[in-house]
Amino acid sequence: MSENKHINTPFISLLALGFVAIALFVTVTILPKGQRTRTQAGASGVQFSLNPVSETFVGVGDQKAFELVATFQNGSPTETVDYLKAEVSFPPSYVILPDASYVQTYFTSNPTNFTRIFRVDGPYASNTSGKIIVEVGAKTPGGGPATAITEGQSYSLRVARIVYQAAAQTTTPQYVTLSGISVVRWVGGTGPTPAAENIPVVVPTGVPAGSFAAARFQVSAGPTATPVPPTITAVPLPTVTPRPPTSTPVPPTLTPVPPTNTPVPPTLTPRPPTLTPVPPTLTPRPPTLTPVATNTPVPSVTPTPKPCTRKADGDANCDGSIDGIDYSIWLNSQCPSTRGAGQQCARVDADFNLDTNVDDTDYYIWFAHRYEAPATTPAP
Ligand SMILES: [Ca+2]
Ligand SMILES: [Ca+2]
Image (cartoon, rainbow, N blue to C red; front, side):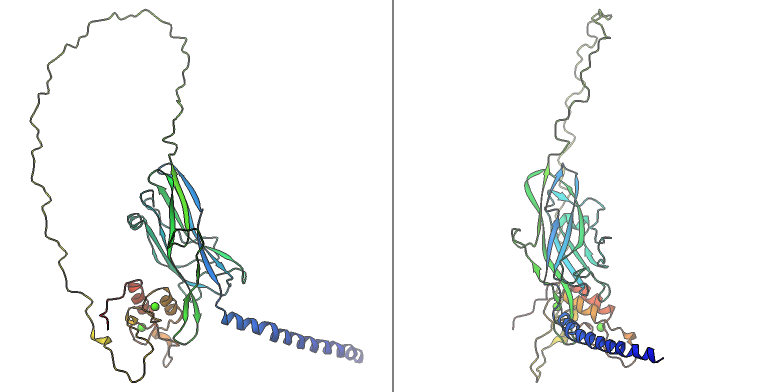
């Protein structure tokens, strides 16, 4: 017993010393790190690329795929993306989206994919406009793809895979380009700002003006236009020996006959044009957006920070535009009416219909008005 005590005393001292050392380590190392991850938002930037950067379609009708990739710099596994939008432009005179070919936005190679699809244009809309709008997001707070697999390291996320079909030959380079990019993350906080923000988009050099990335392509003549070697090669036919003609030349039995087709007067008589001018169906209507009396300027005693004229349309951060940032604010501050008696919502800047709840009704308001141009208001 006493022997055990003798052994345990230095052991306990050593253990105590170990605890002190661990406590010091935690204080010095972990705490500042925790603070840093809170103050530093995460990824310093995101760069977009189209892969491959150069492609050759082998003839009209040939199909090739381009992938839209977002590469985050200095990201974090704990930082997730709430919203992503990109516009992919292409010359529809040279390439089109084949029928029933839709843009892929789910990849098994991504640890996490965007699960909410706001909009991804299909062949009909895209081939008319020469543009595919890819607009995706997270369905739950923090449920979007992370900006890194390993803390601080660069990470490439596959966003979309687009299959194109060559429509016409071109030897001069044509481009698939990107523009209109928005990648939104949640910053947090309980105050009115900033809550959510765009991750800065890194614009590479050497791409067409106004676009963030480009892939070059051309359409070669293809196998159909190249001279095909004759499949029927000249084979010597020795078996057919020249024989005297068995059939003696006979005078042509077809005696010239007078042409049966006598010229007839043209049956297509000029008709009056069937497309008679119709009066325009779009009659001028009175503007539907009539100024409503609800937003009348109220002479307030305290100076208001800034007017939030589009709150009712889904402008959560009152910056005048309804976009992914407002979606992120809504996503992260959902507060349905089933929250329980007496419980108040942490933030209500995404309560667009002012019913004190932040719920699906507010989401649909945002969805219906996003990227809508602000109603023209008379200048003060
Ligand atoms: Ca806004
Ligand atoms: Ca509401």
